[in-house]
Image (tube, rainbow, N blue to C red; front, side, top):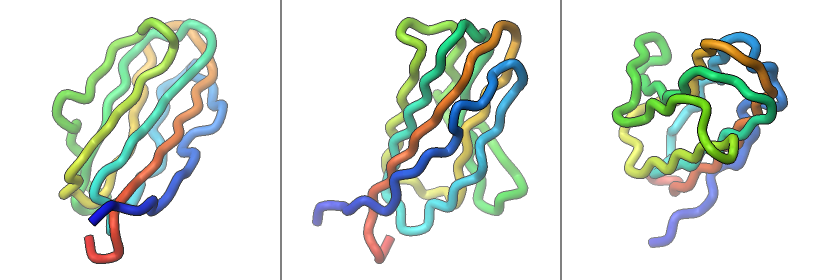
Length: 113
């Protein structure tokens, strides 16, 4: 059965990267997979990573999600399938520079997930 869009949201909208950023946590109930697209202007340096949680209290870095900046094109894209964890969030840890960050997220699943 093809999955349907569960939601398509803006997690972070034009937020300054002159400090570290943690997106809101997103409930993945009914979600089978998601895509997250982060893009920015300016020249920030630092790292991005996804964090996963089953209780919205204890967070762990999602495997193989760490990306160091700068990167060509000023954007990164995560595509995660079979999400068996309950919550997810994106973290940017700044080391230098500045810019403005926007993060979009699309999730697919079904009502029985």
